[in-house]
Image (cartoon, rainbow, N blue to C red):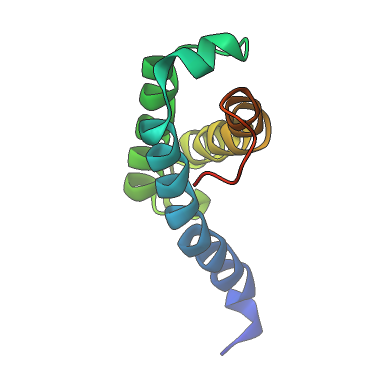
Length: 101
């Protein structure tokens, strides 16, 4: 392993970790009740399915920020993180609060 390629190794590792995270966000949105999204004051279930689905697709296609699609990759990461940090807890709380994957 050469240190001159360390940034590529780190970015590739982040990309590999983010692929299942994006898949988890999409599957979580898919498994939730549609009324829970609006009850939590968030966008509709279909909107979040579209956002997380396109984000997952872009994460797969762009293959990380070093492949030329850095802006799309970053937008995908932000979309997935917004879902996991903001939308998912609100939807779970509306549905009864227990751990739901």
